[in-house]
Length: 183
Image (cartoon, rainbow, N blue to C red; front, side, top):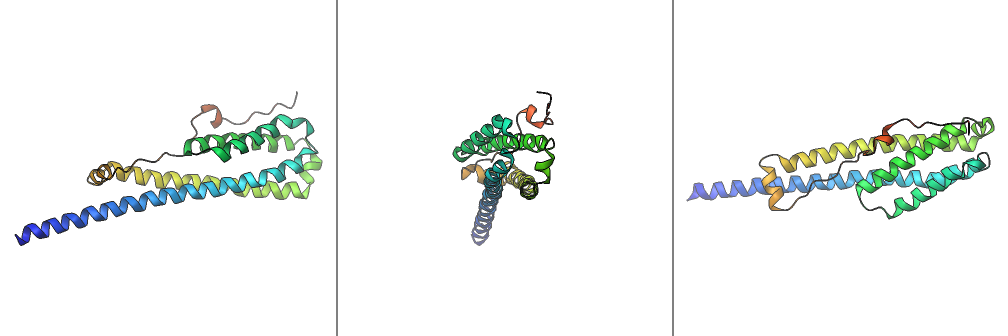
């Protein structure tokens, strides 16, 4: 009788420990996503300043500026990781276009405000890349825990769901941006 009671207590302790581990990993995933969100918000906050600095030099680039404004609006209403990842990737492409086009404007490249904004944006992009990597690592640990035995039994019993990785799904977005100055 005592042995059976000890076995039940040990099993309960193991179940509680696995449950708490899953909860902890789920919280880490949510925190990792929040870090990406913070960096994306920082990037979106920098963009109006960058646009204002660049507008005077690149008046004929209205299409790019319009696309960036649309992406900023869409990002604000996006709710899932996949939606935000897609919008973030599109915005990255648009920003690459602005940076590439700025090469044609020596006065713009010499503008200290533009240089500072460009450096801020570069730093932010590096932080976003790191945050994405950290998020994906955390999601992978969490999703793995949901699938391995015996924690998968606890995960199913308490209805834990896998999280989405932050990925580029469109093959075109993985390609280098091509700029044609002949137009």
